[in-house]
Image (cartoon, rainbow, N blue to C red; front, side, top):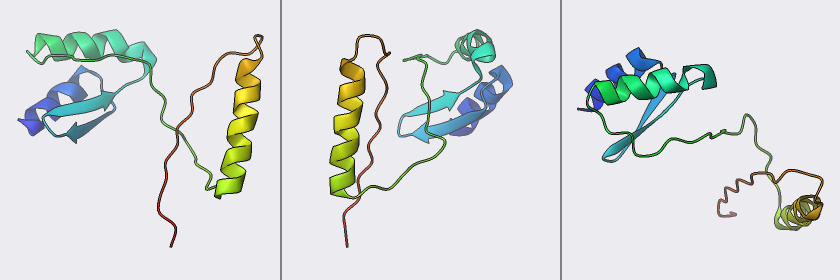
Length: 96
C-alpha cells in the first residue's frame, strides 16, 4: 500500500512522500498543489489535511541561555502590531 501511495503521489506532482504509520505526508510546489491534491483524490486516496507548511532549510543549536534570549526577542517582535506572526519550531535533545 505504501508503494502505491508513493507512486500515485509522485505521479500527481508530489516532490516527496514520507510514510508516517497509517498515513503518508507529501509535499509539492505551491504551483502544483491543486493538481497534486486532485490526483490523490482521483486515485481514491483520502486527503486528511492540506496546509502551507515550510520545513526549515537550516537549524541553529542553542544552549538554554541563548534559547531563552531568542524566544524573548521573538516574543517582542511578534508583539509589535506592524509585524506578521512568525512560526517557531523547536527541537530539543538531551545534553550529555
